[in-house]
Length: 337
Image 1 (cartoon, one colour):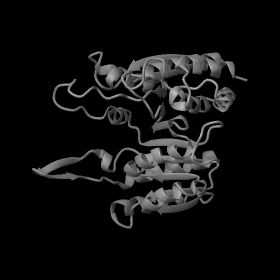
Image 2 (cartoon, rainbow, N blue to C red):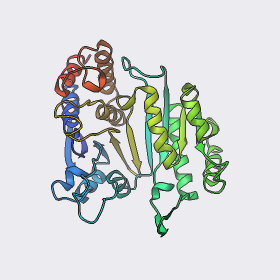
Image 3 (cartoon, helix red, strand yellow):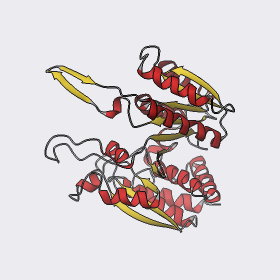
Image 4 (cartoon, rainbow, N blue to C red):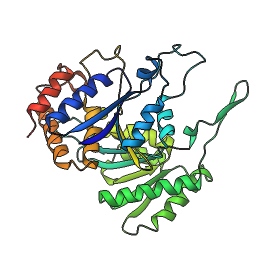
């Protein structure tokens, strides 16, 4: 039996969690779930935004599945707006890279077909280090932090992942033509690490050109490795190419642990109970199963998803139908090979 920590962020995350549990149980996977709240789900229970018990559980199991951490409503916490819960979560675990697999799903409408690349994002520094201050009223300074140590660790991780996935090339996405020191350092580190992986072709591209190339010729890319800000933007751009929130997942990496997360969540005000699309959590759950060695089960569930999406008889609202989360989940279970 697999030991997995589940992090519940609130809102539609509850419907997504119930769907994933039913589907994985029906597919024959035995998991001992250790469930903890975080984000708004935690603060609504008078707990810290990222409870220490949740972090301790993830460190013990080494693997977690996570819904989107919803922020507390404005004005619900004294002392001004809280820090971003998802950023706090990553920092608490020492997460240094987030992987986004971008690929098509059978039956899911998308801008392009046969898209299949991986985006790898460094998440410890850059502008998201959130080092900023007001110099004088009306003038704010934000620092873009780039270090050799973080870049070398990140690019080595990206190249090792490329080898594992059988990729033949890795693109470093940067703005070194303007940010000659910060992005220049990152590019130098990329090239230094690439020399240790002669089987992988290193390529680099300026970020604005990468955006244009992604929306015109996405099949030229196998893996993109980039910094925090560019990676945040390109992750969602990539999802838009292959079918939106229903076609991708987030996989967070730290030393000795992985967290698989939904890239989409919403409040009950935005999406009513039992009306959520569960695919944003099902897909990271499938990535988790594959890394746990459950390749056959993950393949069966993916085949079931393709059947239901292609038949288009039972779909939730944002997939073009009227079905409830429960009905969509039941359709997936019935379609399991």
